[in-house]
Image (cartoon, rainbow, N blue to C red; front, side, top):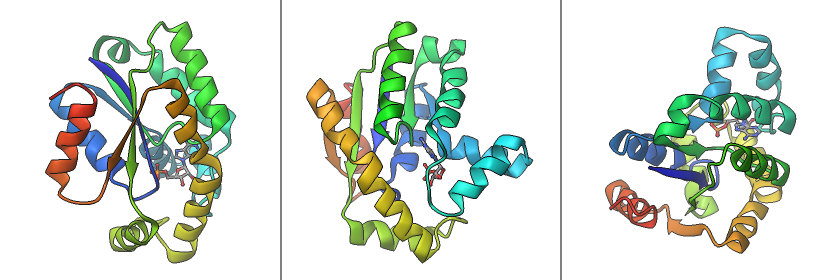
Length: 186
Ligand code: AMP
């Protein structure tokens, strides 16, 4: 049982690795991006609101995202099995809100995996992936937003002493093994 956050630029492979590792070790995979895309597909109020930000490569407001995560983390499976947070937190206020929620729930974070991939590689991967928000102009915006709003979390978690930096370039299996090792799962 482990409680982890996967951090890194868009296209770093967070989702791929999170799905794989969560499945293998029976952890709950929580992806805010997946939850938002689901809401967009269903056409809910949340979906409509989220789409207006996602289409531009901007972040959905913190209070909206924190609300979604608060609800998800309160479920029993999370407490029982542990979790991998994929794509959350993405801003310092989100990280602080997460700390508060987890301390209230008595479920401290064990590790933050920072998957490091250089910009050129990220752009190449996203253009190949071809998701709705993987257009060149939107990709550029998402990278800018990542640098400005999400990158400060690397130092935030480094200072807490729970950051593990892993190169996200190379063989997928090899990267999985490195993450598992950092999480104490291997
Ligand atoms: P992702 O699938 O993680 O790349 O997320 C896709 C899009 O969903 C992002 O570009 C944001 O618009 C939105 N999103 C996902 N997670 C968050 C978050 N933690 N905070 C704000 N917006 C988010």
